[in-house]
Image (cartoon, rainbow, N blue to C red; front, side):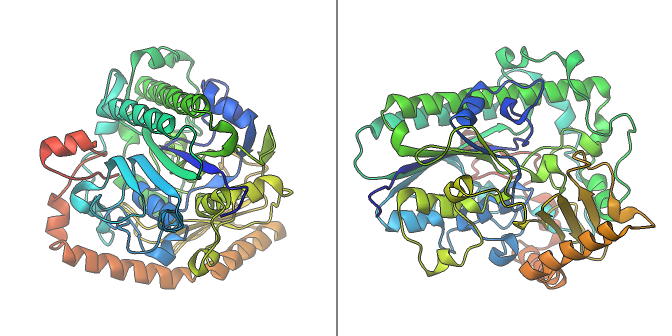
Length: 494
């Protein structure tokens, strides 16, 4: 290992949209601890998930590779240690590598690469959410009403679980005070993932009457795109929200984000109190975002910034304070960052991964030309969706449907799909061609889409057929480990 080896502490939340931080310029939300972390480090303003869905995103984080290469496509194809993870690499190189909290892998019985899994949450029954496999003829998603029904003040199993995770992280960090060898900790919180039930002291920070309205709310119309209509018809959350309920839901989400920020603050305080802050690289990210009613969508699954974008902050040794990095970044970069921070050399597999260390990106000049890819092949979709980001452009490719194109510099709310114009100017035509070229340099979307559907057909058969997928594990959000134990189950879902 390098003589400059550091510890690495990765704190990951669930469903935290990239703009919902004070340091990102949000006018309402209060995130003092994340803001302080960004002030002493670097914030990436163009960071993305490899897939806007929990299970495939977390499989990609573990392996450091694209969803289409690892073929963990969906919420019923969780990571199970089959492919070597960056955690395996660190642990096998002598670095103590620990997880605390939600993982969303297949099972704790698998060797996922950690030296220890503390309070792990894995997918339900080692299976996950098989309804999402039924993409040829998506069934009705009868749990959509639960999102709007479960909003307000109170304690949920999720907030209680996050308190346990935070306490366990504090204890673990204090136990490593004075450690001579580098360690890696992956601390995974669940908030602000729904249900939108928020502890009262945090909900009281936000008055629903003063909450900002969703993007496009005045028009009350969803994007006129054939595949997005399929997604909206399946995850039909918006029909259950009138304006008052929408305001209450967004206030609860902001409250849960402030609650999560407090958990992050406690963890970082324990790191400092243990005397290890100066020798620890800290990374904060989320697995994907949440639409919160923007464009008529709730939760994730789509390629708009609020869903596919993620918050990303890095601080610690070698990171300049107060920098905003505009280079495109991905959660796939975490694998290279973990090796870089701890001084572990790359092997043949890790050298072939697409990620770049965030420590490097935070020190290099900004590079607007870096290509970032995100994919979606899960519930409600009838075809593969691929998002490519570079410079000021976002190109979204739907196999068998028309693409979308957005100029995020001029249209940050993505209200104008330039690809939908009957008369496309030369700059739009050039950007459409460049977006498709960049995508095809990474994969053949038609081949990937066919492979995905074939893998999913085999998965449906292995689970007992379509009827079994319809009747097994029907739920709207993840049961915690305690709930799973109570019900005799062993995992989680969306």
